[in-house]
Image 1 (cartoon, helix red, strand yellow):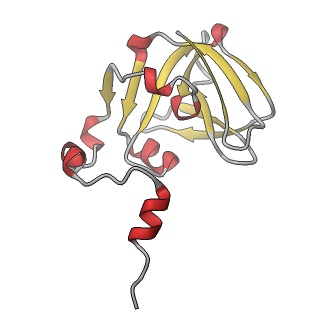
Image 2 (cartoon, helix red, strand yellow; image 1 turned 90 degrees about the vertical axis):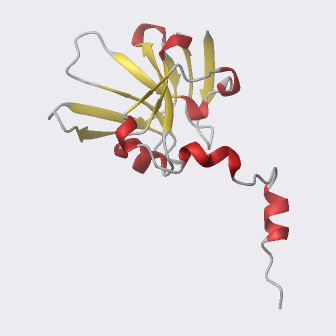
Image 3 (cartoon, helix red, strand yellow; image 1 turned 90 degrees about the horizontal axis):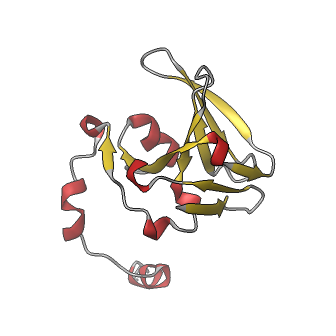
Length: 144
């Protein structure tokens, strides 16, 4: 599937070819911290099918195995674009799907790092859901 997207501020845009069987939800603690949430959704893409416009920054994270993992993101808004292992002779990118326009069409095929998954995730469907932010603001308004 061909996908395209851009960072939050619009300075970085990209396109790639995603194999839908390679869409994954990652529960690792690094992804939780980097995404500032419970997990991150991504897909492995061949670097040859990936194109990007705009300037990015990179951060090198050393994994638990000692391997280097480069995190690529917009320097202005900090939206994660992809990560890769620089020591891999045939680079495969882990595309961050949060900024992909076709996100609603990409269903995770696998979950990884399940031992780090937050224990309340299975109960998520039972938690009340407010559909829009303005409703939240009104419902949380203090009463004095």
